[in-house]
Image (cartoon, rainbow, N blue to C red; front, top):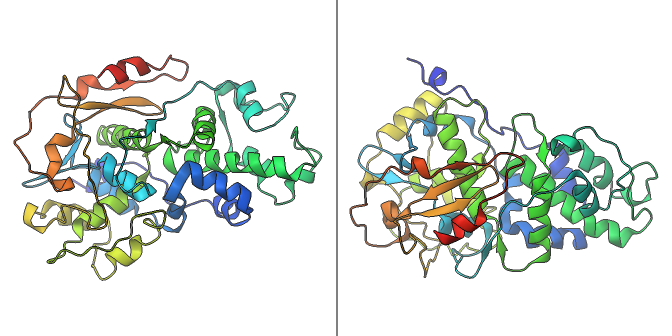
Length: 363
């Protein structure tokens, strides 16, 4: 049976030119807003998507434990690894996990300093298009436009500040939490606003929860990967690039993603889904790069007080997280993991449902 037939789905396989233009045309004020919220994630603009890697990888996903199950070992993306890519050096102990926030159409317009008189049928359905944001904040002289409905028309400083928020929303909706119809969910504006205003927030839990959710959904046959396939792709390749000697590249920080190409340079990788499936199926534990040499982790978050897992708050679901199964990835002693089906712990979130944040915090 064909591998491609078994995994009939799409991923974000091309970064929109408009997103590149938004970032490249921004002033320093706006870029500071974006970097404060996204950290090193802006480096994803330089990563080439590999659809074949994700298609093959999906077939190894175990949704009962939220891990990849290879020939003789398990592997899963970890919070500390994702934090390293963002530029937090694997340290999440003092970070506040940002949860989805209900954002009405009026609230969305207010956050972006757009008049409530602006009419757009998509807003009532809790999403907007990339064009809706770009037409107001893409042109470097957009603050002078008279037909955009901006409430700060003519005020460049206020426009620059809101432009940063608009770019964060566009980035999250395009590369981090994409939709198959390429629309951007309004709820991302609330999360982006929090990240811009607060110094100790983190999107890492949300990012990983969306990757987990998408892996499970695609394993069941969903045709579009709604998580960040670029981060997942990078994560896998770095674990497959095995080095015989320990090498510390000291590349943590905001440039970690941008330096990814240098770290994997020289390693030959398969081409095509079929080749990747065979390649991944042949891997054994002694051929894996278990720990990222550039990532220093002093504290590991791996379980709560009462159960052997944590719950991650995502945009569209709550996902169980059991890193005790793969502590070796963080340089810790690996014990035999407790074998528990975690799939009943998944909570799918409806667009208008109240987010059960208190339950997550209790666990």
